Length: 333
Image (cartoon, rainbow, N blue to C red; front, side):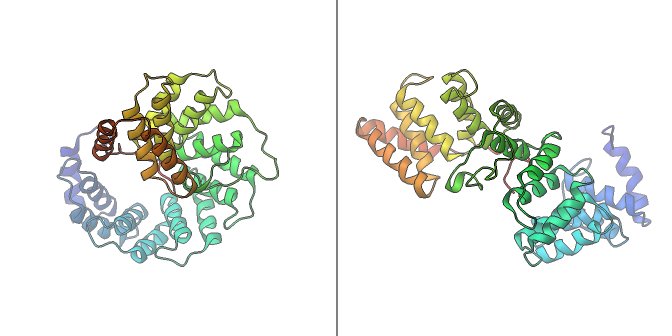
């Protein structure tokens, strides 16, 4: 299938799969799962994955677990997902080990157990699984299931970041910048309390940029704020607008607010109260706590400088706005 000749692959795999060849069964399931060479059919994918999984094929066991996890081709069942993840994980499948760790982390299909989650993350991380490296780093950073250790967190974030894991790149940037965001924007409330990871804005910006270019909305916001403030990069309102817009279009409320504020002030763009109100309105509607109160207050102050017609137009634009899909692999755990 590597050369894209799915017709030949299907012709070769189907008879082997019917004869009970587990590898062919798994690959046939994968074709139905991805819709390559055949119409996408999750139920048919499940059927072939199950045949291979019951013969002990670890990749099929992981894939079947994933189908249960996401409710694709059969009803969602986290307990069944965990059962199949465990079978694959015990054979050393790193994706399954990471997913099993997530099950323990979230308490879905298994009792919540942060230590057990970290144990499985480590097994997968040591095999080079970037998602598990990120999850293990986050466990060290938050002190969940392992002693809090920012140095270990940085070590594992870096391993994942160097493989292109955007969430790890973002968190590595935050640690180097010693940024501390409040409330719903970031899981962290304080940077490294022991100060063992030295502040390094140049390194922070390098990692923010890598993640931002992959579509990570949090890094796009952080990079934009550095350009707006001129912090370790030349102040550049046009670049700030560019990155705030990228994040705002994905629905990041702090970026929406800052983009709106720049429109209202005419920084990097011609002053436009309608667009300013629209973005601030969206930021307020998608935030909570202190951020929501601040955004709503600024929205109302801006409204005092606008006509009723302008406010109505801005509210119409906000109602019609739809978030752009987030890039794969940039979501929070």
